[in-house]
Image (tube, rainbow, N blue to C red; front, side, top):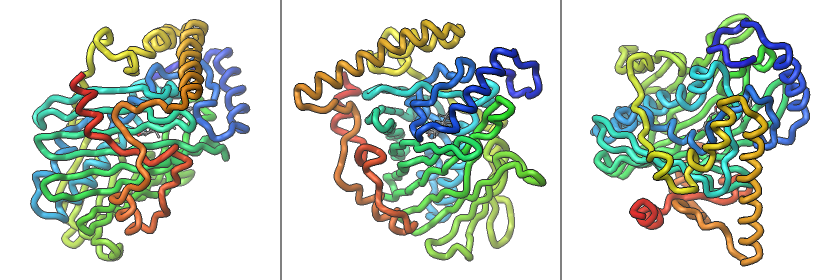
Length: 390
Ligand SMILES: CC(C)CCC[C@@H](C)[C@H]1CC[C@H]2[C@@H]3[C@@H](O)C=C4C[C@@H](O)CC[C@]4(C)[C@H]3CC[C@]12C
């Protein structure tokens, strides 16, 4: 049950087999907080969940492409294309790289992941910050100044166990395009873990998710997987239609989010765009060398833990992790004594988010459940300017 690079059926060491079956027994009764899940060492990842925000823009050219499109319907189609192109990074990149999905490191309050992508799209910047620890919430902002495109959002996860681990994502993302003063609300799909029995877990997305634009277009993405009888892994089918007219689609998109997909004109059935992850390479994210990073930056803060996990040294990983956790406990105690709260570096809590509320209403979504995300989080440009200058 060590990584087998996706080749199932390889010999599994007896010790790993028995710790995996005890793990399976333990998750049947866990309480919904993924952070509290004690996974066997071989399923632990050396990467913190705060890094996952970068999956939104590993193809910067696709991320900024809608800003150059004058036609609003085509623009909405390009936003859908970008969203679909992020799914493989978000939900399958670990199983592809490591042979199976792994349990990420649980970020501490204030943990940061900062970087930028430099390529033909210019500079695209990323800030990701753990804005809450109980419940765990990550907020992020990704922007490309030249193109005038900005994505911001935050998310938490709530897990339940019923045959497998089922995860509901709480939160949303909003893409803003300056040129057209346009916003797109992106809802986050729920997911479940497949392959728990075989010991090579991977993510499958559930039901559907939406993209609602302020310009009056809705995209609905339906997810399906490999059934008992038919169907392929990681399949989706999407429609883009004028708001309220689901039966009158303008574009359709079909394929596998881990593989190729095609976008067609719904009337003429002509292919208008295609995407193949094997052809469209990702741009690597540039981050500061560890020694130049702030002490709150993820790779610097977790270095000793990550090194130990990669070496398979569980004892040292546990010891180094407890140093971080104890320091965090001390900080919270001190803040409580001083009657203050930890100051977030890039985000602020707001009472309402009008853009979200307006677009969510069009989708018939309920209000934001603030309790589940410890508030409504917005990128604070003022704070960011100061923090990035420092
Ligand atoms: C593998 C298993 C045995 C342990 C459980 C791991 C569990 C905590 C992981 C597994 C998949 C993770 C999802 C991941 O697929 C992608 C995303 C998208 C990203 O934008 C936000 C985080 C999220 C939802 C991860 C959360 C942690 C999950 C559920």
